[in-house]
Each structure stands twice: as structure tokens, then as C-alpha cells.
Figure 1 (spheres, helix red, strand yellow):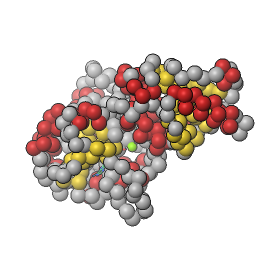
Figure 2 (cartoon, rainbow, N blue to C red; figure 1 turned 120 degrees about the horizontal axis):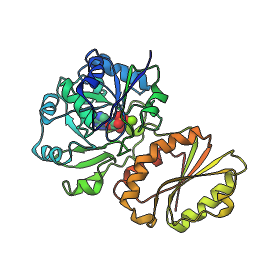
Figure 3 (cartoon, protein in one colour; figure 1 turned 30 degrees about the vertical axis):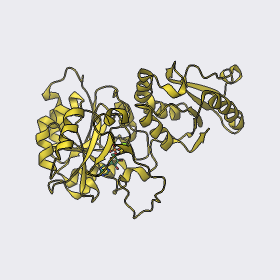
Length: 364
Ligand code: AMP
Ligand code: MG
């Protein structure tokens, strides 16, 4: 299959330019399209055929359900059984935007979309192209991230092309995604509210609406193949470049010491070692900086201390995180030592992705 790429300006495009994508989705085909979080691989949420194609193209395990994307609240009413009043308020506050909410699913959504669960995860994206596509189709779009399973999520069309070339008919390219990490997934019940996956909407922002909300902790659960955790995606390896990732978490002093000791520990075994540097005030000795085996990767570069995230720079880290993880492989780096950041605001989602990408985590 030939994979076509259409370039669209998100601030200046016409509905005619979306026609090819619309026709494909109407014919149970699948299309990669931009959202504000990452690129999605979408098909009609009413079509088993389309959804099966998504699982196949990505190599996604069939027990990992998809998010259904909608363009207005009327569409929400058509795919869920009830919309509790407190959740409607939440939708009105955070949509369109990077928040995914679980609902009791209606029969219109085939089981394959939700991997057999009786809940469906729904979100209204804010990206103008995603919204226009769904609005014009008048069909909700089931879409996971448009990467091969286990690879970092795509934040540029070329990432999608590298992973799915020849497997999908069309990619809509509209530049890079500005949030850079996926949506926050939440489950709100009468008794509790939990963040199943931290993402583009922060815990702090959610707390102003849901004061009791907490982050789901799977530490005490044992995952086996036939056990379905609350959010099935949690049990899978994710976001991983081919290079080995070692994540270091702690104070400035701890990071400075560990980066040096890890660097020299692995220096002889590895061809090229990357240091993913996120804080200006963390000192990397010139002996390492000048070593031809060292590749410095600067991301976000915060002025502030480790425990006080500077929000603008943390947002930049989120935006560049996945493309940095992909670039590591292109540069033939075989080990990356990563400076952890504070879990404040978007930092929680960033650290969640880094911990999943890491093969080793070294904590103070
Ligand atoms: P992705 O499509 O890569 O953005 O991943 C979607 C995430 O939402 C995965 O972690 C899924 O496990 C999670 N998810 C989707 N639907 C449900 C659901 N009905 N219940 C719980 N988690 C879900
Ligand atoms: Mg994904």
C-alpha cells in the first residue's frame, strides 16, 4: 500500500482538503491525523472493520482499548448511556482539550473499540484539523496514537511515516503537536476519582474541580495475561527507543554525582552515551562534555531547581520529549542518562513516560 501525505496548515485549511480523509474513513479505512497531544491513527468508532485495521497496523495488543474522539456534546450523548451532571461540568470546563474521561458505553460502540470493557474512553480534541474532521464526518473517531506499539508516540508526521509507511493509506501532516504528551485519562465514579494515565491536563488543574482526585497506583497489582487492570494500557512497555534509558531522580547534588558515576561506569562498554540535560544549574564536568563518546541532548533547560519546575520549560520538555527519544536512535546513541524533573504540573506526565521508557531508574 502506498502511504500518501497531505500537508495542511492548521490555521488555514479548507474542507475540500479534508475530503480524501473523510472518504477513506467512510469506507472503513484508517487515517493518521494531528491532534494537540500526539498524532492519532483513526477510523470510524462504529466500524469493527476499521478498528481491526488500527490494531493490526500498530501491532497493538487487542486487550488495549482505544480513545473515541468527538467534536461536540451531542455526539457524546449518542455513544454513552449516561452523562452524570458532575462529569458534564468537567467536560464543559476541559473540552476541547487533552482530557479523556471514561463513560458507560452504549451499544452503538462495538466491543472491539473498548477491548470488551463496558466503559468507553472519550475525548474532544482541540486541534482544528481533528475537530473539523470529526464534525464534517458526523462520526466519532476511534484513535490510539499513530505509532507502532511500544515505540514513542508520534508528534510529527514523519514519525508516523517512519512507523506506518506502507501500512496505512493517508497521513495528514500539519506540523508538530504542541502538547507533546498524550491526554490525561480519568475515571470518575460516585465514590472516587482517579487519574489512570497522567497527561496534558495536570493533577493540579483537575483538583480545582475534583478535590479528592488521586493518581492510580498499580504497584501492588500483579499483571498477568488474563488479568485486565483498570486501564489495560498500563501493563505494556511503552515509549521506548532502541537505546537503553537510565533515569536518575533526586536532588541536584545526587544527579550531578550519579551522572558522572554512571557515565564512567558505562563509558568503556558503550559506543555513544547521551546525557539528556534538563536543568541549566546541573553541572556536567568538562571532561565528559569534551569526551567524543558523549552526546549532550539539551531539552527544555530549566533555570529553576529540580523541585520547582519552571512551567514554560517543562511544557517545552513535554513538546520535545518523544521526538528526542526517536532522535536518539537516529544518532546511534546506545545509552541515554536522563536527568529527572519535578512531578509538578506537566512534569507528572513527563516523568510517567520517562519511567516507562527507562530500563533502569536510579532514585535518591
Ligand atoms: P493511546 O491510544 O495510546 O493514547 O492509549 C489510550 C489509553 O487509554 C490506554 O492507556 C488505554 O488503556 C486507555 N483506555 C482506553 N479505553 C479505556 C477504558 N475503557 N478503560 C480504561 N482505560 C482505557
Ligand atoms: Mg499510545
